[in-house]
Image 1 (cartoon, rainbow, N blue to C red):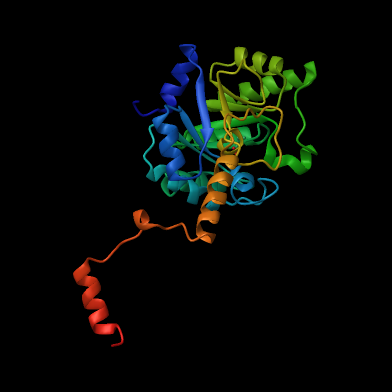
Image 2 (image 1 turned 135 degrees about the horizontal axis):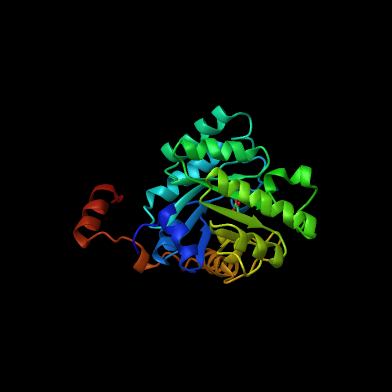
Amino acid sequence: MARKTTYRIRQMKKKGKKIVMLTAYDAPSAQILSECGVDMILVGDSVGNALLGYESTVPVTLDDVIHHSAAVARAKPNSLIVGDMPFMSYKVSEEQALENCALMLQEGGAEAVKIEGAGREVDIVRAVVDSGIPVMGHIGLTPQSIFEVGGYRVQGRTAKQTKAMVKQAQALEEAGAFSIVIELVPSETARVITETIGIPTIGIGAGPHCDGQVLVLHDMLGLFQDFKPKFVKRYANIREVIQTAVKEYSAEVREGKFPDADYSFEMTEEETGRLYGRTKPA
Ligand code: KIV
């Protein structure tokens, strides 16, 4: 697969080709996703829940995401790498946003950034795009604002809310975003947005009408099982696979069956002789 660029991602909407996106936070996962032809890798602040044991994405820092993005970038995936700008790393001022988005590319090896929100964030998106950094927007449920939103609830249920969300998407497109994540909205809301704007929409919990879909890898593999939102389809139960392997390993260690000769290094007879000749008591 040739390397994916923001240009090619935009072209996919024009050609009616669905866009596949998944999260990854480490090199082996990024390698696997690239080998499977995944179009975009999101180094999401969901790393906070999936890997770091936080209850929300709020505690995740810029350094956390850069650290994981750099690991993903070292795998040299063909998928486009999108670094998720974490809580408060872009809202303080335009200067702060520009500096931190630049770090995501320079130190994190990302090729684009994702910014949550479409209120005063629109001007920030414009400034970041003007500086030459591609931006993916994010509307609907924005988990970094969870304390203000008041819970993980479906957004945009009414006609009024849907119209407001269409305006947000249009503002982000006008500001130069190359695509927009739509999270946790009814399918019809996502359909209206998708049909109204010219850039790709990437849905999560937003039904089938978006131009593409994103899931958190650890959710769809069944690695993270603290809770399962309705929109998560588990394509595997890797947690069970790991448990089976760990239990088998533990039993073999306790029974002295592992490691056997197949997994050990033996000395030659000569080496053994020399060892005992020198060290074995007479
Ligand atoms: O951090 C993340 O993984 C995300 C997705 C849920 C879109 O923002």
